[in-house]
Image (cartoon, rainbow, N blue to C red; front, side, top):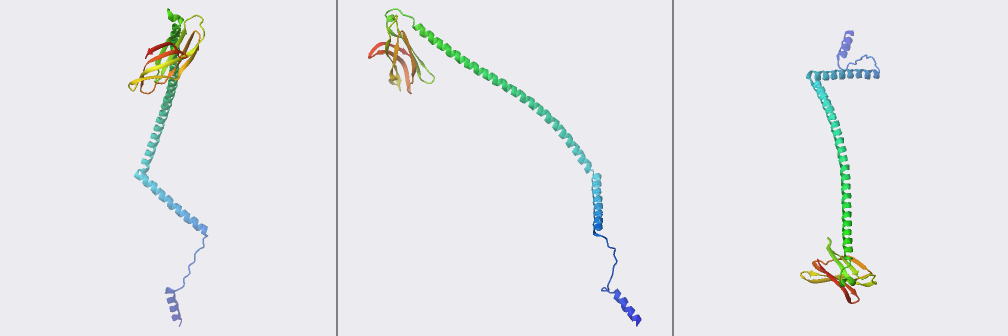
Length: 248
């Protein structure tokens, strides 16, 4: 009976469903994680060393260092050139500013000279007009010396197309009485090929004088009109006291 029981126990132990028991030592979980971290770090260090060692064997790291050094050298060279160009730019800008200042000063001086020249020309023209006016005041011989006369009649074309007129009237007697009358101007010429005559917008210009009188003004010439002569008349009422005509 005992041999049979022993045989059955032996067969039960050899089967898959036989119960097993393992004895393990219990480790705290922080120690387990620390061990895993050490193993992972060791593996990473080996991998990094293998990578660096491979680069050194292949010569890649040496080439990168040379390229980096070359790039730094080129950068330093470009920086030096940039400083030189900036200095040249500043110098050129300073010269340009000085030239602009001189040019502005010269332009202002030139404009001042032009203004002075225009003023001198205007004064010169005024002196010529005054000289001609006083020359015409000189007494003349004959019957004209004691009469009321139109001593001067001047007409000039302006760039605007207008006519500038000036009339000088003189009483030739000594200490004459005041004369009161009108001046009439008649402009004659052609308009579109036909005869034309025009007068001042007011018709006549009043004049009151003793020894002499001078009147002047502008006349707007109509379009397509060619003025060939101007006639000045001294009127006292309806009577013509003096008359003078000039061609232009």
